[in-house]
Image 1 (cartoon, one colour):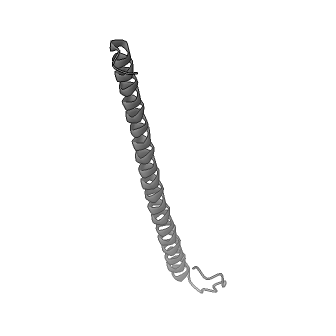
Image 2 (cartoon, one colour; image 1 turned 60 degrees about the horizontal axis):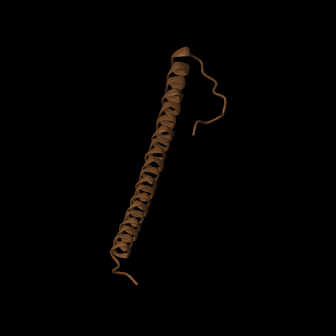
Length: 86
């Protein structure tokens, strides 16, 4: 954290060094914050990806169950048409 205490300097070289140091600290803090946001973004993307895969699996399983139901119904209709089912 950058100090908010006013600086009294006798030469501009010292002031420039302090300002450069503060700018460097500000830049470092900004980069650390951006890294934190990037990590959070990656985590959110992974969670969204995992959720999407889960939904796709549910849809696939639902379609498979529908297909099995249709196949069973077709089989029963065929047997009924042949007179095999009472």
